[in-house]
Image 1: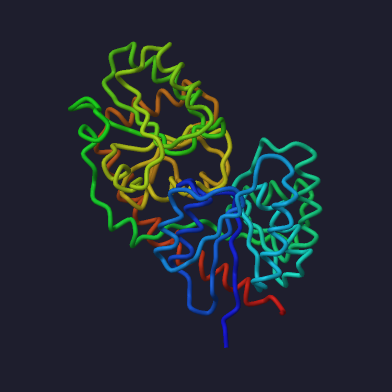
Image 2 (image 1 turned 90 degrees about the horizontal axis):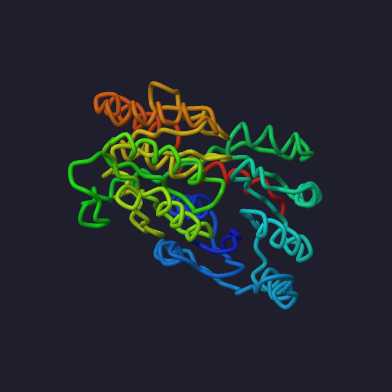
Amino acid sequence: MSKPLVVHVIDRLPPDGAERLIAEVLRNRSDAYDYRVLCLVEGGLLLEEIENSGVPVTVLGRRNGHDWRHAWALYRWFRQYRPKVVHTHLFTADAWGRTFAWLARVPGIFSTVHSTNAWKTPLHLRVDRLLARISDAVIACTGEVRNTIVGQGIPEAKVVSVPNGVDLQRMGAFDALDLQQAFAVPAGVPVFALVGRLHEAKGHTDLLPVLAELAAEGVPFACLFVGGGELEDTLCAQVAEQGLQNHVFFCGFRSDVPAILKSLDFLVMPSRWEGLPISLLESMACGTPVLASAVGGIPDVIESGRDGLLYPQGDAAALKQALTQLLAEPQLRQQMAEAGRHKIETQYSAAAVARAYESLYDGVRV
């Protein structure tokens, strides 16, 4: 007798937070279900990793705009494979995936909300509320995300909280990287990084003026921007304008983020909005301290001054002060690193997320 099928639906598979979570959860899956991943637009760097873990990936190749041929292909795919559960991630996949799963009479429909999504318009929120009606549950990755979506009109009875997690075994498989060789950073200077899409949510443009002040004061440092995205040209221009070419290094998308994290003095996250960032959990799991803005689910994880540092989002002076402190105090960095690693090992594992998801799937009546 075949096992019930669970399908994770997402647009594409770059090594970003939501996509990384899918890969981590699938690596920690049980044998109670068969799994597949359905990419609506294209694959990405995580496609091979997911398939190597034994989970097939299908790419439908949706074009921009309202591609109704794609809609028909999505509906037919659900009807052909008849999953027990469709589990969607991020807004476009949430909208298309849940709609056509419902039309195809998929028994179980779930969506994970990965961020407070401050960008959403009233139209997006109306779509979210409508689709919540046909969902078995809307999964919030933090208490802040839960409060936000309930405040936006998602019925509280529909919302379940499941914190994100990381695969600790995968973290342990990476060795530290030689950053000077890999990215031509200067020798003998503290190195920190911002890991994430080059997108307004991640706060790159808030960080650069602060870095320019530090550079003007003669503070030695190197900052890596790890990730790609739509702001790359804008950020490159700003780095040049502010004379930061010898301090800021663009690394693009990387499949070895844990190796980079293990090589840093600390991670910086000047995010404007967040859910529960995978890069935060990965950094702490790798023993790398984190300086972050107090947004989304970040304060749920970091106890400022003990296992990381927090500052008020948008407060450039506070960000500069925290950066200066971490750059100057290696002993503080070490203390935070040890406390952070212990917290992730005991509270934020991908195996726990996988079990929590599957307990939800178990409740679906076929």
